[in-house]
Image (cartoon, rainbow, N blue to C red; front, side):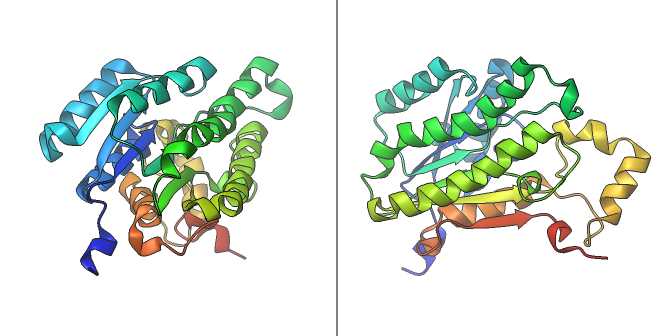
Length: 258
């Protein structure tokens, strides 16, 4: 019985932004814990390649994929039409997909900053609402939102990104309280710099890299698997009394003083 608390056998999880980086690592982590995983991302070719790699490792029946842009309202509906057609139900939703453009606040066009909110915040809200009827059919289901330390303190990612992630953290708290009686737990993780394709540009600048390391007590960049482990904990039966929480996966960044 105790071992089952640390497994996800028989559960189905949907992970967005899952073709690369943190999303791919989350999918692999959940598969390793026994879940069937549905992965979604915009880049159809990369998503299919990732699905093939995961299927080789975990079995053909363990992973399915659907190409869609969560920043598009119509495509969000299509994702859940697909999930419903599969008939496998849903116990876990991981809102991982995100986007950003780093600019001074006065340099954003309206289209640019609205696109950041559409993908980072509105998609998570709407996908959570679409998922709710399926999640609430079970005694204990879980939503995990991938936020950011940018939503908790100032980071040089641009105001719209920080605003969208801050709102995502607040959404996590609100849904956790609202849906607790329905058996749906809602939590978040807040990564600092993680070694992914998206961060490679900024981290390739030696001076900037040194500044990041200087503000990180553990003196290194995080790995996608380290974020995935925190996400997986929230999904497990072992976390059945945890909701509305946010774990910073940041090497101590948020706790660093002077």
